[in-house]
Image (tube, rainbow, N blue to C red; front, side, top):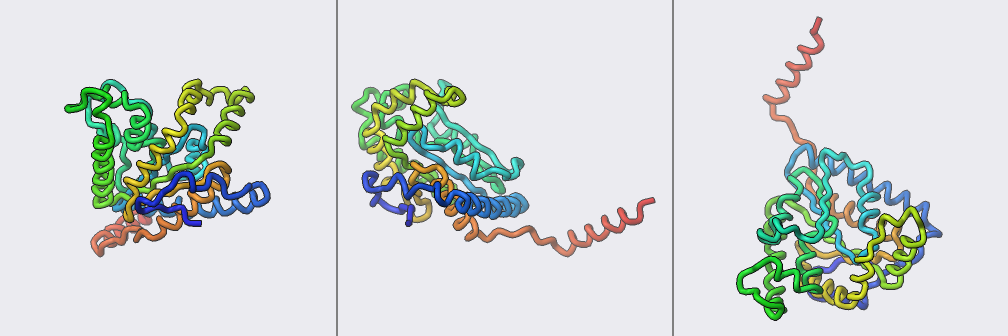
Length: 288
């Protein structure tokens, strides 16, 4: 099944939230994920050695879709020297005094690194689309009332995002955008699990229940955002997320397949550099 979207043909109601139950194939799935992780770790080493390409992985999802556990599993064992994760929550008052991509730029990985955004700049066309009053707090010019936070306003933001991603691509960054697509029924099960299991209590927030009331509005916001920002260069991957192990397999397969297309290699020494290595080796061997 192809989970990639490169244009405006995404219909969220037709997108599956589950492939099948992973229980019968769990050992095989885990083995394939681990094999994929070996490829990702190896690629990261070559990236870090040359600092020519950077990878940005964006995860967006409804609450309880499994973003945190996805990141923990997919990037386990990746060298922390060349890896970073950034979480984006409600903007602070200081962040609101800047453009909405200001806080994003501060958290970008450098070339040679893999960076993960647990939520991202897409919050500014998702949460703010469901709760347009957030935009008013930014004190933007020509936005004086909720009526100004309209389709025209968000059309401009979609254009900002497309241009921003094009800019990053031209500067050596490969962007992977994953929407972990969970069903409303599965979200309910996971919320109840957080409530019923004491060890899961820390993950529960009453705010999650309040946001669940806006389920349909969020679904429309995701559909609009994906259709407006999916391009051939920077596509969206809509991953069925009702089964966590299958979603992890899908994401790791996509990352492995696409990263292997990059012309990664360890640096080749120039003749002068190779000669200096020989000199250094000789000095070490001749030490008394």
